[in-house]
Image 1 (tube, rainbow, N blue to C red):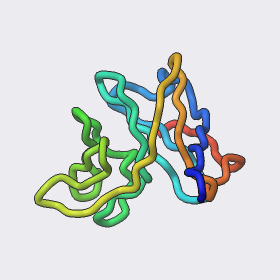
Image 2: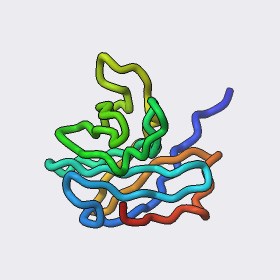
Image 3: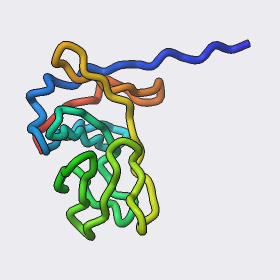
Amino acid sequence: MTTPSQPIWLHVCDVNAIPRLGTRVLNHASGNIALFRTESDNVFALRDKCPHKGGALSQGIVHGEKVTCPLHAWNIDLTTGEACAPDVGCAQRFPVRVDAGEVYLSIDETVSTSAAETVAA
């Protein structure tokens, strides 16, 4: 019987390094990951690629718990990565936790942490 693997948590940054209603980008060999901070200080992480035409979600406008893609105004739910109706599609979502003001991203074993670097968006 196999046991489920424990998540790997990568320390990303201090929560204050992500502006309210803004983003930071985690540059990664597997593809950039956008970290979003809402007005209520919730933090979410999505692949930085709109499911419609691949626009950089990190360049979008954060409102409530959604981000609007800058290319074609698709709204993406930050809690699920799903496009809001009537649009259909999904951006890959990554679990995030904030502990004592520090942001951690859960990644699996196939994503190397050695190549990760955060940059301002």
